[in-house]
Amino acid sequence: MKYVLRGKLCGYICAQCPEPLANVTVRLYRTRGGRDVAVAATAEPKSTFAILSDAEVKRKAGSLLIEVRTDANGAFSAEIDEKTGYNGGPLQVDVYAKTVPGKPSTRFPGKPVQFSITTIQPKWRQRDEALVAVWEHCIQARFWCIIRRRFGAWVICGRVTSCENKTPLAGVKVFAFDRDWLQDDPLGDALTDADGKFRIDYASEDFATTPFSPLINLELVSGPDIYFRLEAGGGTVLLDEPPARGRDPDRENVGPCFCTELCVDVAEPPPFFNPRFTHVGDFHVITDISSATGRTNAAVLGHGGPDYGFFGATKLKGFCPKTHPVSGQPMRYRFLYEHPNNPGIEVPITGVALVAPVLVGSRLILWDLDGSGPSRTFQSIYVQGSGATPDPTPVPAVPPGTPWGPVPAHVIVPDGNGWVAVDQNALDGGFYGPLLRFNTNGAVPGGVAPGSGAGNPVGDPKNGAAIRVKYEAAPAMGPGSTFSNDLPKLHVNNWIEVHQLGLQQFLAPGASGCTPLSTALDILYTTDHELMAKWNLWITSSSGVTPPPLPGGTGPRGGHGTEHLDISSWPSCSYTVHLTKRRALTNGEIDDDADTIRVTFCK
Image 1 (tube, rainbow, N blue to C red):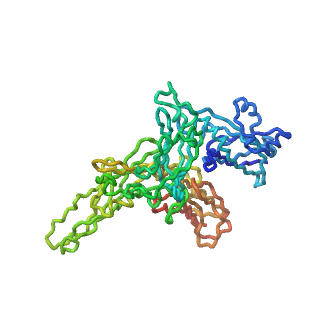
Image 2 (tube, one colour):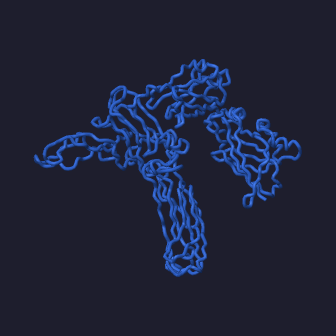
């Protein structure tokens, strides 16, 4: 009999801030019989947690039943074969970790560690051909933070709310610093999510070193003395704690796991004329797009859904005023992207990445529509990659009394660095809404994904990439600060799915698509994509036959195989086999639509 233990592990940074034990190795050991095992299996994990030495790990190696890897959510599935001699008794659960979540890259990676969590007696239940049990556990903060310290991984978990009514504040940038007698060390920064929560990961060397390190290390205490600065979009300061705050008892010498609540007085909101990047299509960059994956959290206005990626030309939306909110200088803006394959390289979105135009606003000009003389008329303003129009708009050279024709659009083309000058004659104080139409193929190219023939698995599956999109707005000339905010991840996939369908009978020597079938139908199908929303096989005909259910599914990667049907009793008629698919992709306003390929046969 096969035993399957399905589990999920996490560790507490504090009671309000758990994190999954992602990409660690779970080791399950056979236990020795006797009273001690029964006691261990009923003991609280706080009494059984232990960090093991190399010698202790080596001594118990002979009792190892299986080791498995957890996924990004800390989940695992361990299948213990009956050949191991295991009979369903207690299991000792250990974890072997080479690092911990969120740990920054440092000069001191830390030594891998193995620790015992507890001994469990799984409650096995019969499921098909196996006995299955489920076990979930979250390690207490006092133990998990010891493990994090061993890797030099320190973390701040917090939440930002309004002081008056404790409403969570999203989109606030939180900066953390260590108060030191020689210098104040920046520990990192983060943006609050829709619930006002933030997380800052840093390393021990970020606060334990000085400008003279490694020769001289003057940090004499074991933890940093923390204070914060909070900024709204555009750099408006909401909270600026004095460095001395880091010497208060609740902030001094904090440990590797530190949780805090911060509040700000927002009775006087920051200036609403501050520039801001807010949406990709209809999806808000903070609340609707996951900062971890770059995919959508849920459907918005009837399109998209959980874990949808982006493709094609997307509208980047936001606001940029005509003039700087402080200096009054004319404004300009631009978008840039950073590909994960080229970290630190920010590429302006311009040229071929702006093939399609986008309407950014309108203005009033004098124009003669009907030959009765010029009058104030609305003119559309577009931003696109080429085809800039003169400003002011040229007047047609026609005889008096002749209509000038339709009002031509005013087209703005970004410069070589991606900057778009906001039209100073635009209505409504500036450009609000769509600011740029980003052709994502320019950043994450796609194409037709190669297949391996109907019925076969795909040998070279194609994936997209999660790019960072950054927005900047600044005076076109003269003084004034630069405003910026970004979308940490936007998952883009422009690959066409693998979509192959065939019939085995048509591949026989001498056969063709006109060869009638008699007794058997073998459908060869392959469909594959990183973000597949749904796919299915189905058969139609006018024969009145109801075919049995055929393969289909939801979720990524699709499926492949050969589906055999006995058609000996089906009446003579023509039949059509369909393979339909739909990718989980949106451009922010329009989703990928379903596509179907077909093969027809006669009986």
